[in-house]
Image 1 (tube, helix red, strand yellow):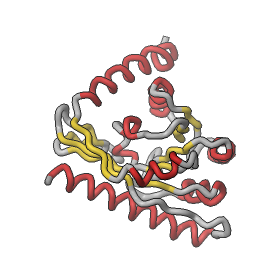
Image 2 (cartoon, one colour; image 1 turned 120 degrees about the horizontal axis):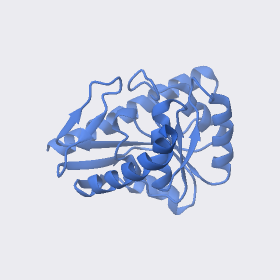
Image 3 (tube, rainbow, N blue to C red; image 1 turned 180 degrees about the horizontal axis):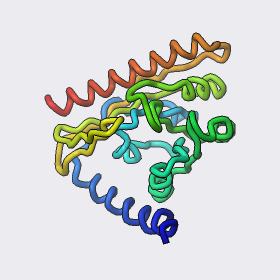
Image 4 (spheres, rainbow, N blue to C red; image 1 turned 60 degrees about the vertical axis):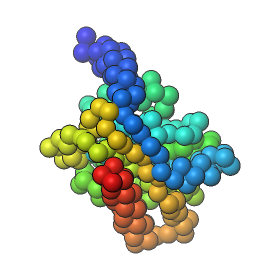
Length: 216
């Protein structure tokens, strides 16, 4: 019965509620050309956003085939079901469970032309710290990383490790796309660590821009 709820009932109800909820928000998008330039060329990208701002992110997607890296933890099972109903594929794994298998699957999907979607600080943090997996996948695929942020003028911030944000209905909100970043194919461990810091900085920059936009 529990598995039936997780796999069938929750995704159906959760997706319906999320779609209705998104329609109550006044969402603007800044710099869509930063992502559209790749989709027009049918070139896949790696989309990155912080774990605590993930709720509305499916509605920012502008491509045709996106696969989201979702953890194998229990909460990942709920996310997996909703994402599938929203038209995304999922790859199950993280830096702590199923990592190497997930990386291999992501590389194959990128080669087939699909976009890859990461929360670089997931599934358990530290908050707003990019883990090495995203830089490794970017290096192996040669795909650009494009940061994405969501901001809302009025929101509830949970006291969870990721400070999960729930925008309040009818509030002013925005998606902000960042400048694309690349990881060179010849990069070593030190270069990947430096790129992770650059990814962090870009994600934090677009988050700050999103928050400032909503308050202006």
